[in-house]
Length: 308
Image: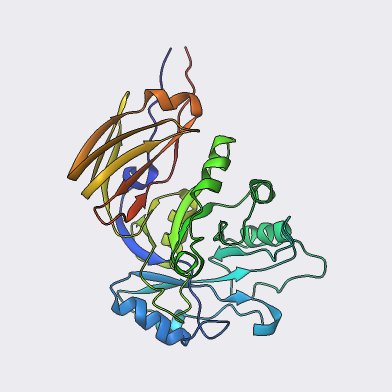
């Protein structure tokens, strides 16, 4: 029997990592700063790119804010929006993060559902994610109606600050355990009514800091999510995975259900963990945490089937 070795696309691909926030709001919807000021805030903080994703609602004029004038030689933007439609199983308005929308993306159509709106965004070329599922108690059954979604927000900084419901890990793991292959993102969702910027972001591996290259990398899963800690490398061997990172208090490889292996020690920067026990679950993902409890999440890898 030949055992296939999983590969992490973020670390196998050429290029370098670019830092970006892909869920942000301005006063084009319910944020407190102008689009120009929001872009300047992230540019001056050392971010490489930003997606301004204002609420795509009639009361705001269905905005897809044109942030192209705020690009510089070292900072770029991706057009997007947070889409809405009725209604989840709990009767909540759908929230659908769409990054990479065309400027002329059409408003919500009469009778259009959340899943149909998400499918239309994907068809238009967007990277679509399930935002802040913990904040409004989105169920796994709801998430299953978005089969084309590329990612789940495992951490939403504003939701965590305001409601202590910023965690989406539980939903992501349910989807993964059910056989869904989906990425994990961390975001600010900043509105600037409080200190809600710079708490979560993605590190995207691409050959250029350009909207098209970044969007392609996002769709391909060539990124990881973080609150601050950084992965330097993830190397999957036949029986062990080696993680190289900034100083970590804990390093974990997690699979289906309770399957996990971890190393807990102060300041570790290189760790090898066995993962054979995770193989029956079909996936594994890496989490590191620093001494302050800030985390970084790799995207899941899928184990290849064993064949003669």
